[in-house]
Image (cartoon, rainbow, N blue to C red):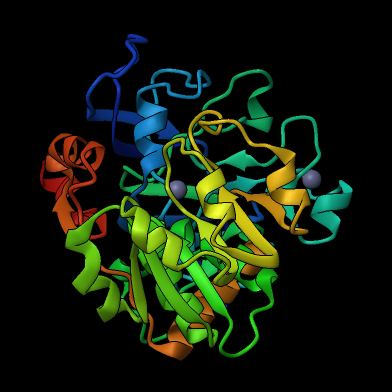
Length: 368
Ligand SMILES: [Zn+2]
Ligand SMILES: [Zn+2]
């Protein structure tokens, strides 16, 4: 197997777009040069081709979770080409087109990791996130630098294979939004014709509509945004429910077998419980902050409903969703941007002014 040179001893020079390290919250992004650790024998080095722009990137940048260590470099929907594979790497070789999602490492020894759920790693620091994650090699120094950069070093267990023939730019959002929605949809165990509602038709939601449709569900897009009606049908929704219309909400009372909530901001889950059939399930993807409104147990208990949470997907699920999308011809809808336009893109992301995912063309970094 062609592995290029046997090892790289020098640190890797990297160009990224990040905050410049003054610790100012909400700072805009600018060009920043830094060094990555040289790849170890079980790691690969990628040249990054594309990187998706997720809402979490904005949260990292603005310290919305109170966990950001500055400087930070966001980016966790990374598609790249392998330029070096360490001697112990068995799955990848130079030239492979691969992906990196939310995680670059975990302890791989806890019960969650052993059962293939690294995303729920129970080790002392959980999984090492691709951006702003805990660096095991650096002790207490939290801060992995993400994919708004021209290269990244990742251990092979956390590298995904981009299926042959898949457009690499539109594959990028599958590495976070895709796997984050695929996991809960898979756990719904959808039977043909079952009615599935997807709340919020944004980055994750638009992929969820396509996935649920391909899984055989009758899909309803649930959105307050009338302008998304047409595109929701194009994505495969059979119905569109405008959530701010009380009459329509009433019409769908008790209708759904399953609902997946994909909105990133806090909302009141109670009105959606009323849309579920008896024994229905609503899974709510991680939102920023607590539910608004008061969740009364009686709303769940009286009809045997269940409420679940979901965040990032496991490595196995991420590979599965890539393969599933290749098989079903599912392609996320993206707007390709240059690295130097990232601050404008972030402003638009705050207003949800994107159909449906910004993806950075990383070749623009070299030129910037
Ligand atoms: Zn994300
Ligand atoms: Zn673990």
